[in-house]
Length: 158
Image (cartoon, rainbow, N blue to C red):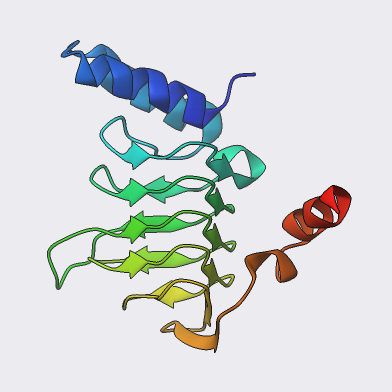
């Protein structure tokens, strides 16, 4: 099935193979079809899920997104105007709707970023961060206990 991550992978492969122009055209095709900005230069891990087909998602071209990440609609992952650098998202991270992750921050593995949170500092692994600016409110979490789709999958395997 056609989705923005699949198209981004094709564009990323073409870019890595030094094919000119086509990766940039695919970027704009993704923008037109899915209303998200997922550039071919971004490093996107395996099994990344974009909520609602990527609607409103913006990812910086130099950002790194790990494996098994779920990004809900209207999320921005990018730089800021005060510090040079872009975010690095770990593996198994859930980013809630409308969250903004700005600047050279690192989101640890299996972290949960709440809806509409604005992350401007690092978030350790296995933590829940919410608010503006985002603060860690719980440490040592099991992400499955905060996310319905992961909790139901965990129950079905037991």
